[in-house]
Length: 137
Image (cartoon, rainbow, N blue to C red; front, side, top):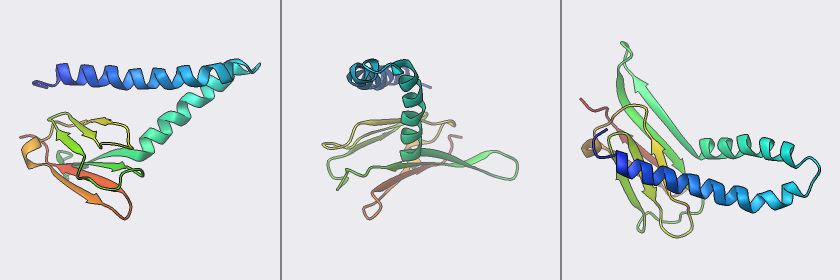
C-alpha cells in the first residue's frame, strides 16, 4: 500500500469521528431509558447493516481463484448528479466526496487494483455508482 497510509489514517479518523458524533447525539435519548445500554448494543449492528447495504464490494475470480475484477457499488439516494462529486481510486481504497447532500464515503478494497484502469458508471435512475477496476499485476 504505497502512499495510502497517511490518507487512510485521516479517513479512518474522519469516519470514526462521524460515528462518535452520531453516538453522542443519540446517547442522551437512550440513556434516559432504563434499558439504555441494551438499546445501544442493538443500534450498532443495524447501523453497520445500513452502511453495508449501501456500499458493497465484489471480487470476480477466474477458475483458478485469481481475482479478475473488483467492483464496488455505492447507493447514493441523495445525490442528483455526479458533476460536483470527487471520486478517487487508489490501489487499496476508493473515496468518494459526493458534494452537498451526501456524506463522504471510503471503501477499502480486499484486493489491490490498478487505479489507472478503473471505470465508474453513474446510474441516475437508481442513484447508484459502480466502480470497476482490474487487480494490479
